[in-house]
Image (cartoon, rainbow, N blue to C red):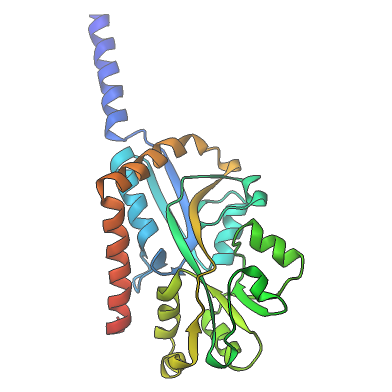
Length: 264
């Protein structure tokens, strides 16, 4: 009788594990306005490529995710203090000391935007020598960028107001802006600002792009959840192999472009 009860308990526990009852949860922070990767819709709900990818990870692994999307600098600070894993996160040597990283979840195309009257030939970071470059506050674009910045190859203006940075171009306060991801980022900034929409022909993306920057899920080491990364990475790999990843990316890019056209 005791053996039968023990067997029933084991079966019940295994059933709970399989059904995800005992699955862990990861709290996620990230930018609330980084279309098409992640953003908050008009109802305050998280949307985007990263959100849909993590939803699919949940379906395949049982790992749950909760969200707190906010301006990037706030999200970065929260994650740095161990209050959440962060999405849309670039890797550099300094961050590797404090975060554990997933496999790449998305590749940002980093582009240089300037005004028609400020165009210059762009090949690599050395092309920015002596320039005034606007970037999003709290971001990192890799070790090569950080080294060039420390060497004062160019000067940097940081803010979270991307539309404001575009106006700074026209007022000769900066020479260029580093935007991501690619053309859709520029279209989004312009499409959400009436003045920029009316003057959009004044701006241009320089070719070639600066780089394709891999974006990761970064889990603070202080959260002690790095053991979940192998399952997350396995799910991401499977999504690439079965086509789910491309469907998610294409769907969100299409959604953002439709919103720009309809204004909704």
